[in-house]
Image 1 (cartoon, rainbow, N blue to C red):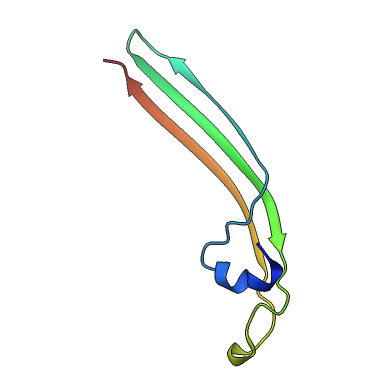
Image 2: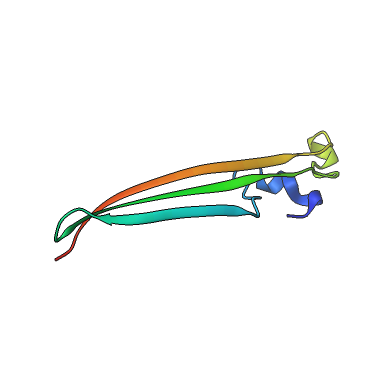
Length: 78
């Protein structure tokens, strides 16, 4: 994300660059299983440089994002 274009990414600041994921599946019975996964996206900040046009007041739009995601699934094999 170029620092001059941060204004365009305010609604969905997808700026994270590094993450770590871990997960596994446990078989409960012959056909049943449960899966769990966790992902941590580490905080990334992009500081805008003249990213807000002068006709909108000028200045900089700074973006920052970090995420924690947890997924749980139950499955039955046929």
